[in-house]
Image 1 (tube, one colour):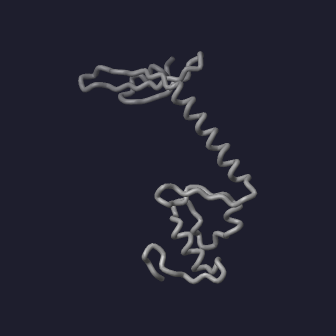
Image 2: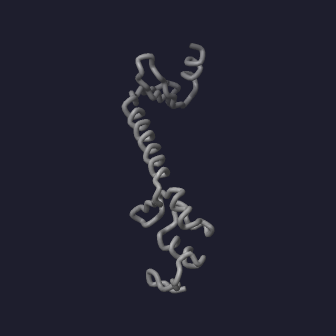
Image 3: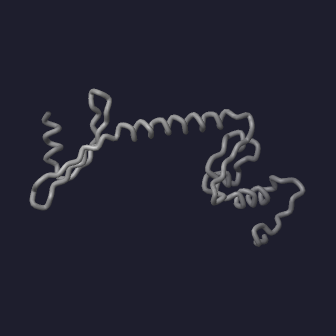
Amino acid sequence: MAERLERHQASDQTVYQHLADGRRLQIIERKTENGERVGLRVDVTDYIQSQERAERAERRLVDAIAALPAGFWLFDRDDQLILLNDRFKDMYGNGSGALTPGQTYEEILRAGLESGLYRNCQPASVSGRSN
């Protein structure tokens, strides 16, 4: 009780409360310029449960990709690496450090060419650039 009263007296804060019936509330309180207090109570139960389900699904997907016996990688629409599994790293190595999220396909390919990863390949013009 004392803790809740103390939080209520604080000037600006946002806290979360987990009710006995399982609902979760976001409590937003602000003190106005004239010293009055205004507060909102937002039921965020569905949002939090949805977020928790999405996080569990993402963990399962990442675990499944990690368990693949094949090398796997995923690029976004900007051609940047988002995700790859250890099997892919084992197959192609990561000595150049190019196999890191955020690298483009071209950067990864160029690093492989420069490190001699590909047999019988000569670095050539890619995307209008030359070495």
